Length: 317
Image (cartoon, rainbow, N blue to C red):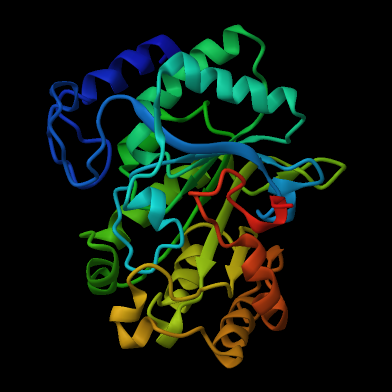
């Protein structure tokens, strides 16, 4: 299917929205709001070179990160809650979104990193058509919480270069309790499987910068809430143990996490090392980990404040 045909098909879906697994079927053109609350114009909080992603994404020049507002998950611990839940940001037209991509390209970033793109796919793809006509050529990163519609992921074949999904839960009951989503595991695993079919394992250039492929993010949460070992088993059995994993220790109780005693503290060193050891014993060799002991310092640099124009502390003078 040609890009123009994909644009028309995706835009038509906004009149009875089934872009994500909630399948709210609301007419976003008429102002009706579904689970996520999104309308027709994409809303973004910021577009900036970001230096806090995994090394092959941020590289030396940064990842051209576009932070979209609104979200189809309501994670009680979301560190981006100001934009995902309280909807900080400004609406942009398709042409304005295209210009954001082109401006970031001019600034020398390695890629365009679409953060929480799931509910804005029609607008993003249409913006790309405009950007391509004006010389846009960077790799696209699809940076998602993982609650995606596999059919929409199929429509992105040939458009997205690098998929960077969370595989946040291996238990639907945990996903519903802490993120208000149903059947997360089914939709997440089907979507990630399709992503892998499209792009395969992560490919790096001679500078160590990602060109194409899949990288799975695994956030270690207190008390084993994420069920990461089961997720690792799924990846090993159904994809490959050559998949790049980003195993993160950075969980901290943000937003409404303090309302849940089990989420009100950081993970322990033992919890983190247990996951790393399990992945290693499963034959996973590729990916990134975090230095648990440095996180108290580093987390202050990379916790976002979307009410500050610089977002991250490492940008502030």
